[in-house]
Amino acid sequence: DGGITQSPKYLFRKEGQNVTLSCEQNLNHDAMYWYRQDPGQGLRLIYYSQIVNDFQKGDIAEGYSVSREKKESFPLTVTSAQKNPTAFYLCASSIWRAEETQYFGPGTRLLVL
Amino acid sequence: GNSVTQMEGPVTLSEEAFLTINCTYTATGYPSLFWYVQYPGEGLQLLLKATKADDKGSNKGFEATYRKETTSFHLEKGSVQVSDSAVYFCALFPYGNNRLAFGKGNQVVVIP
Image (cartoon, rainbow over all chains, first blue to last red; front, side, top):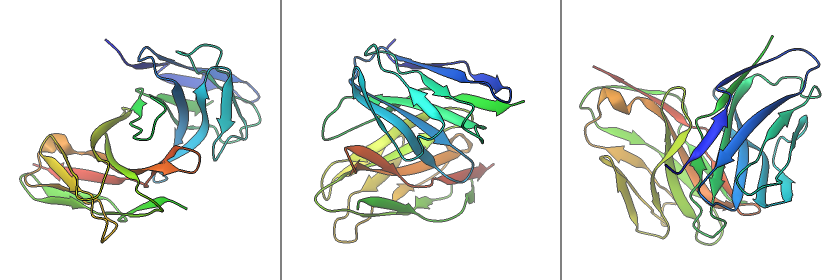
């Protein structure tokens, strides 16, 4: 089955710790995205990548980092510089064209211990 | 710049009631418009979309018509079920550098 997988489903972070959220897709999509979702605030874009080895900051990139070494993978690292990391994180992918439909993974919920 | 606005607040209604969720947009050119649905604890799923004026998107009994004259893309369903309880997001493309712009979402709760 084609789709997007995110792991883990739940992740706990200690103070001062970096954690990495995994996102993998087998849809052969060029573009991938990371969103953060907080209650009542909708989705906010963290980073996105249109092609391998290239990515751009979204609206709330501070305290996060990404890499895009392979087309199917777009991991997100939440660094210790992100002071309020508790949120639901969603990864998405799409074909990079004018009528863009994004396909979403099931999400990772990050909690701070 | 391009943006979408959804009506404020959650929507609570009884089973078999008529559902409307308002979405208006601001855009230059001719954006594509989308409705996504998020069931509890899950990611978003595309519900329907429309790519040009007067297009009607439909899926699972939901409909939305792309109205350029009123810059709107309201979501409707004639008879909701408990299983329709979810958060619904209106979205527009393109926003900025070929991105999606999302509305804040509306929580819909259907009571048996």
